[in-house]
Length: 528
Image: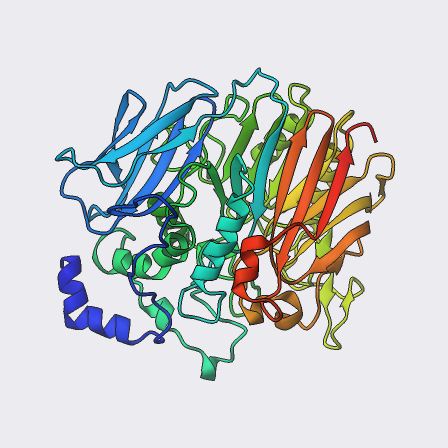
């Protein structure tokens, strides 16, 4: 059955009608880019390295022939990433480092699809740039026309952040909220329409599944970003909701590791809407669960490297996809990936090494799938005196190995800038278990959420805010703040400067976003 027949016919009507009225966004226009003609483009999200560019794009109407991306004088033919020709990717290689390229998109008939724009590759790997600015945030997803922060306001936050001219954007997880299971909801009140809208015995691409996926996920990305990041390389890391479930564990269901079909939903969403991670010579090829079918391109779905000359290297890693439930030997991150992370942490060829896991270090909200064993009791308190059902001791063991590697860096600032937790904050981890880290404490940063709904804050969902885990001593500089927010990090040869931004939905008008300034600034000195 063709997709149009599906939408017009009884099956399509039944599937769409079974869903809540606000569940699927309308396929309306993307946010209007200021002083730039988007033409037929719905969204553009590029990533870059010193020699490559990978661009994801979607268009208002399916294209009948392959479009072409021109990168300077290089011609790159598009590869269709859906089955109808609305989503495409462009992979340019062998580019010159540190060069600003003029990019343009042309249809098969050579007509321009949008106004040309510029995008720069990163500096040569062995160069010594004097500055690098990166934007960090998390949890930007959520269906439009729902109780999540409206996509227009999320886009406004993105635009304000981009006005500070970051050279890269790190969007750390939860780009899509469309959970398929609801074990916390009593069975009698549970709505399975989202789950039933997919045919889990079929492939994701083609007919019903692809149609539902596009309606569910597409607007959560395209309406938040549009083409506003077209000149800024982006790095999108997946977290639990990107696998179409919350991380939950009950006798009825344990949602992670992700089941095969939901893993394919995550892969398909990434394939259509945001770029995978480009290859890096210091990241071993073929790391487990990095990619399927794209080994020749060298891209990775779960393990990323943002390298900016010899000044900074950001290690991005997804803790959900390879998690195991094996007790003391359990891991979040596959052991071969852990080895890569520890090797890079101990390297000496770059000034700043930043860990950017999808799961935060330092704090807990008593959730099941955390590094830490703290559990929320029936009286609303966090404790480690009671066991946390389905939590794995091996997760904490891996945490301690990574913390030890970070604290063991000499002449560097140990730092983790993470996602997942719906808060913005900063603190120094002075102890982890029996490890005394006061000589070189690990700075832990909560990057701040962009699109959290009212019931999504830890204090609303669990009745408590986030607090330091019992396993660690954290000297909090900013206690976790539950507001829509983001962090800008400036990397300089002798320090890292962190600027924290927040906007309060309850007390501020959306117009205030346009003039947001940092509410707090922290300087981390290499010599300290």
